[in-house]
Structure formats: structure tokens, C-alpha cells
Image 1: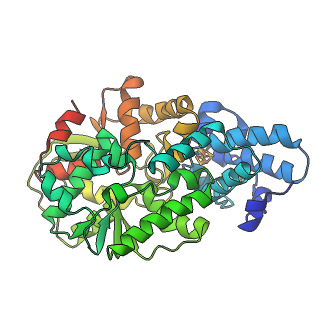
Image 2: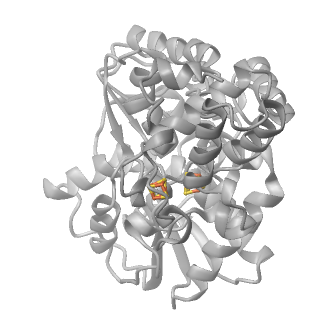
Image 3: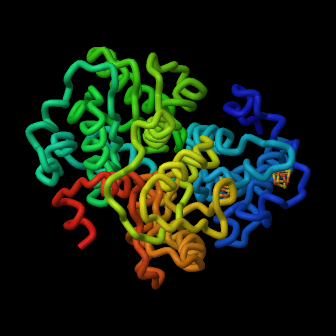
Length: 408
Ligand code: SF4
Ligand code: SF4
């Protein structure tokens, strides 16, 4: 059989490139799904071997495609296989294209249809009213009126919040902290509020590129109407879409500079604008490199620079860190596909966290922070997760009601 999407993007030969070394199965920090399932098809190698056999008509299409679908959607898109592959197969891109291929072949999992319906109806992945994007949490902010003055104002810089950071209590604390930091720095910024729609990541990651393009077009048009030239987002998933996938998979080149929030803050530290923070925190922390912030986009040093600048922080690395960091389990829309599987993957991560003397696991990814907050106690840990923006806000002396409420 033919894989039209792989051919369209010139990736057909990748299935024939695998050297079968198995590094992507057993290498340091490699595939978490293989570690849990112990099925070869779940590793990068397994998926390439099945794809190759299908291309060569050595497997019966329906059974093999069902197995391939389970493995392709049962993947967190963590990039561990891509990181370690000795023949440089660009797996994350290939898996997204294959998800699109499987959709075209009628092998899209039922759960993906439900997630798509939610997005189309509510314009956000949480399935909540768009009016809640700011209204839903603004009462936690110390200056609610001031916050609303930023909504849909004309400005050169926009803060793109992302769905997880607009609707979920723990990640919202990072949103609040970020707005307080922006205000302290006299940053002139805008946000779209209830006009912000999902960046399209869940659609792109599951291969529905046509629908994702509609979401991307909407946000870009709204930001252009406000005169925006630079977009900052704390969500590395949104960042990866804006900065890589819009152009490569949707054919859109956003007319803005896009910055990951911790890249922006680390730059300010380099410029001496955020040194000598007033509040000493006295906490032992470790850091989780979320896959889209770390391996998939390369922001390893920026968050560590911020941590180094926070007074009183005793920082210890995870046993698997930076490019070898274990996925938390929540990536690649796996939670929508198989929540229980995602949770079993998080157990590996939590064992890693337990192997440190840290009290807190800090991350620069709102999805990871949110998922870990619920998985840590589930797997017997008393440690807690927190967003780096929250830690920084605390070091800058900010207090707000939501923080106590969320961590009560
Ligand atoms: S992206 Fe991650 S979960 Fe998916 S196959 Fe590669 S290593 Fe495994
Ligand atoms: S690491 Fe790359 S070359 Fe080695 S088995 Fe995995 S996919 Fe094949």
C-alpha cells in the first residue's frame, strides 16, 4: 500500500532507513510507551517496521493498520525515539503525518472524533464557554480591573495563554503570575481573552490539519487586528505549533515573532532586568523538561537560568534530565486516547522524581504541571508540581488568592 502523506512530505524512505539497532526501545530515556507496554510495535523501530511491511504488501492491510493505529496513537510524541535514533528519523513529524494518513484511511480512533467535536463546538479543548477564558479565574487576580484593561487592547506584544492555562486551576496560577510579572516589567501587552481559540495543537497532533488551519487563521487574524508583532506563550505545545508546525504542516507562516515564555524571561535576566529578586524561597526543587519545551524545541538552559536566579533555591537534577528527560505521560493527546495508559507512563516519571530529595517538581509546561499534580499522589508521592512562572512570581514577592486555593 501507499502512504500518501509520507510521500507528500518526502518521508517515504524513512521506513526503510531504520537500522534496527533498538536504541529507540532500550536507550537511556527512550520510549516510555514501550517501557510500559513491552510491545515492539510501540517503539519507533516497531512502527517503522510495520510501515515498511505494509508498503511492501507483506502484511494484511486491515489487521496491520489496526495495530499500527494503536501504536501510532498510543504515543506521547515525546521525541525520545527521534533524540536517540542513530539514523535521524524525524519521528514526531512522521507520527503526526501518519495520524493524518490513518484518518484519511478511516482508522481515526473514536476518542479523536469526540475531542474534535468539543473543539469545534467550544473553540477550546476543555469544552468550557469561551467567556470563561478570563472571567473564570480573574477573581483570583489581585487587580481584576487592571487585567481586563489588557484584553483586546492594541499592543505590539501579545500573551497567548493556551487552553490549559486558561481553564485549569493549577496552570491558571502561572497565567496570573505571568501577568503580574509583565506588569512589573511595564510590558505593554494584550491578550485575546474570549477571542482566543485553541492553537490547534490537538488537531495537528492527531492529523486533522484542515480543521487546525481554521483555528490558526482565526488567532492570527485577531492578533493582526490588534497590531501585534510578537507573541509570547508559556505553553510549549502552543509554541511548537506557532513556531514549527503551522509552517511545516499547515503552510502558514505567522507574521509575528513567537517566543516561549521562559525564553523571554531568560533574555530579561541576561539583560540584567530581573536580577536581585527580593523574596528568598528556601525550597529544594527539581526540574521536569516537558517534551515540547525540551527535546522538541530545545529550551534546556533557559528555565535553569531562571531557577539559578531565584534566591534560596536548592536545585537538583532528575536522574533523567534535559534530552533524556522522561515524558510525564500527558503528551501527544494520549490522555484523550487512553487516560489509563498515560497514567501508567507517569508512574515512570514519578519514580524518577522520588529518586531526588526535591520537595517540588518545577516545569515550564502547564500540561505537565497539571497532569503531575494529580498523578503524584496517585502513585504514592507526597511531592508537588509547580510552574516555573509561579515560583518566579513568588520570588518577586507577588501574592494572590488563587495560589493558596489551588494548592490547598
Ligand atoms: S515519540 Fe516518545 S512515546 Fe512516541 S514512539 Fe517515540 S519515544 Fe515512544
Ligand atoms: S534508533 Fe532509529 S535506527 Fe535504531 S531501531 Fe530505532 S528507529 Fe531504527
